[in-house]
Image (cartoon, rainbow, N blue to C red):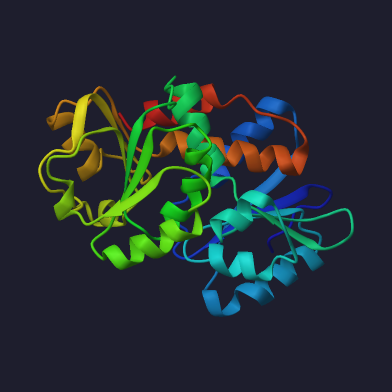
Length: 279
């Protein structure tokens, strides 16, 4: 029975979900801030998602996180959405708002910006950024990145037409260009972000040449117990730093926790603990 009497219940829905660090992260946040919550991972198939969300909130659940492959379904289900969710076209955080309606937000992009600018202390203004991949992960981070006053942002994808279609959605937000992976040869970027799914199978995106500028950095949205293929590539090619998305994971979780509980946890000790556990 997935309930604890008298304790506010939260969960993360996804498929698969056994690898999720979200229950651990939110439990650490709760302990740190003196909150009492019950947060669990639940394997939810896309075809039962709407029914499972309705059942969760009808039984008193307070908030949900949604991960792959449910973020677009959560976007469609939420009656009210934040501006950043509308930009992303996906929702990773659900709750019932003051009017009793299902409200959705997307904390992924903001979590990435927190990790880059606060934890890694990067100044992104006037920087040349490259995003590898034009899928849903890219869509969730483009708007918050463009708000950092970049010199330019390029989306590279195996299918250029898909990158064009994605860029068109953000055409009024900043300097945004697209190209194929092959066209990266000879270009230089201050930060390369891997938003492809290649890391999930420990593979490298089909980079052409080394588009990493001197003192440039690498960031993989994926994370694991070992460095991803892209993180290793960055280190092998002289990146000033080459990090995975663990920090982003914790930061986006902290933003969701704040939306639900009204308390901002300190992410640094949580990131430090999770980092130490995989060394």
